[in-house]
Image (cartoon, rainbow, N blue to C red; front, side):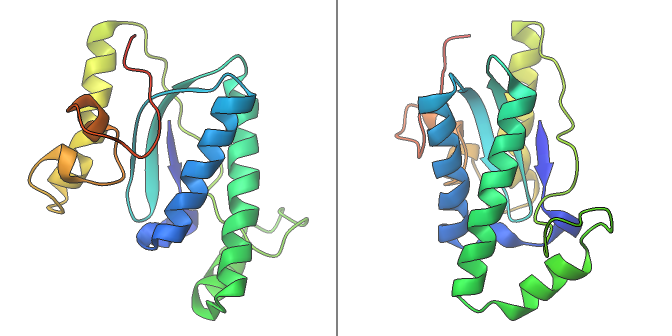
Length: 161
C-alpha cells in the first residue's frame, strides 16, 4: 500500500511526526493482529507491506488516528503554514474536519508470491536510494531495509513470509 500526505506536503521531515506513524502501527500490531512485512517512510508518503484480518478497517483506523495526532502536534507547535495548507487542500466533502492530512485511498496491491514480495520489498527499500538521500537502503532510518540487513529497526516486522 501507498499512503500519501495530502497534496504531497512534506509532513514526515520531523521525527515527532514519523513517531506518530510508528506508534500508530505499534498499536495495531498489539491490538489488531496487524503484521508489517516491510515499510519505508519518506517526507510526504509511505509504502507499507502489511496484513491483518481486516486490512481496510485497520488502514482507516491508522489514517484517522495518525491524522488527529499529527494535527494536534502541528497545532501545539503552532505550525500555521502547514496547517493552512492542510485546510486549503481539504476536500469539500470532508465536512467533519478542518484539515485533511492524508490523500484518499491506499493504493493496495495483492502480493501472491514470494517473487512478488521480494520485488515489492526491493522497490520500497530502494525509494530513498533512487531519490539520492542515501547510498544503501539500510542507511535510511525510516525503513524496514534495516531489519532485513540484520540491523535493529524502529518497529518490529515479520520477516518470515
